[in-house]
Length: 60
Image (spheres, rainbow, N blue to C red):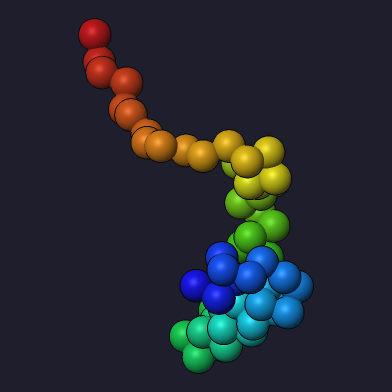
């Protein structure tokens, strides 16, 4: 919430600290390698494109 109210590098650093802490507590130390792999496979969010849903193709 604080980052959305005051978008600054200090608040973003706090968000990253929380994510890093949760990652360590849950044993997800490999989160950065998974993030990189997913970015390579599916692309990132830098283009500001929002996926609204995924639909399966119906068999004919």
